[in-house]
Length: 150
Image (tube, rainbow, N blue to C red; front, side, top):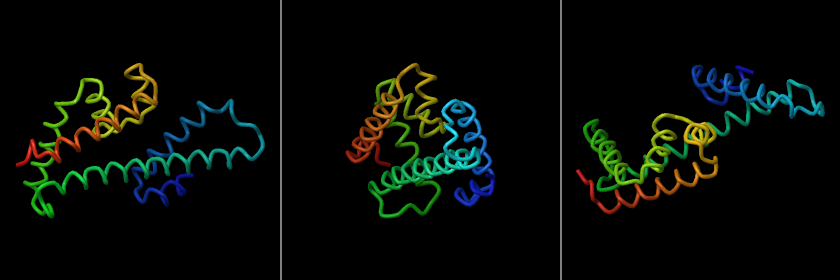
């Protein structure tokens, strides 16, 4: 299973994290195993799905910040410019309502998934997802408006 994770994640540390999360998920969902396939096949499906979801999440997050880096600049070549962009995003985050800001921060900066955020904040998973998407759109609008240009 670790090899499967490693091939998908291309990084041993991330592969180990995904495997650990997959085993935890499998343990929580053990009562849903229906013996229609082998236990190994069922577990491998959980592992593969967990890795795919993580890859999608990382791509979406990277795309968001790639989009943010384009405002007012054609390319970012210097570390100083990157720090200024991060500072702009953090300042824009301050304009978000508390709940959205917290969800945005927990998801994007702290790496929690929406299920974990829902448990932490005592909201539904769908509420966490929708507030995250709204926060992302709002930050994009703020930055596109040039309010925090450097």
